[in-house]
Image (cartoon, rainbow, N blue to C red):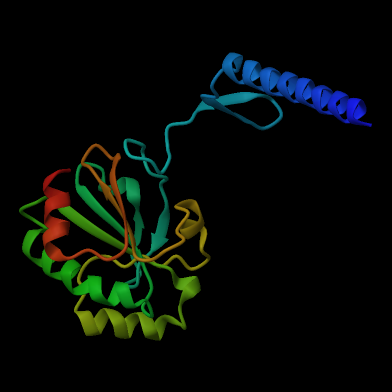
Length: 191
C-alpha cells in the first residue's frame, strides 16, 4: 500500500511540474496585446485611451444641469479636474466647498476647469441635485450622467473619484476620496 501511495504522489508531482513548465513557457513566448480587433473584418485600432496615468481618458458628451452640452475633449489645452459625485454622498459634501473655493480663486489664473459629473442614476431626482448645487454655490459645469454610461466607462466604484487631466489631455492623477483645497491646488500646480 505504501509503494502505491508513493508512486501516485511521484506521478502527481511530475504531472504538476510539467503543467507549470508548459504554462510558464507559453507566458514567456506570448506577444503582448497592443491592438484591439474590431468587428468581423479584423480592422485594428491602436488602444490609446484608458484610465491609467499617462493615458488619454475616454471622451464623453453630456448635458449639464444648465442645459449645455459638454465634451471632455473640448477642454484640451486646459487643466481639468474631472470629478464624479452624488448629492447624498457625505465625502462629496465635505469636498465640494473646497472645490468651489479653489475654482473661484483659480479658474482663470491657473487655466483650470472643474467638470463635476453627477452620477444621476444614483440620485433621488434632479431636485436634490439642484438643491445641492444651490446650497454650495457651485459655479462650475455639472454634467448629468443620466444613464450611468460615463460612470461605467470610468469604472467608478467609490465617490468622490477625481481624475486630474493635464493640458495635453492625459491623466496625471486619480484620487479616490475627498480632497481639500490645499491638495487640489498642489495637484493642479503639478499638472
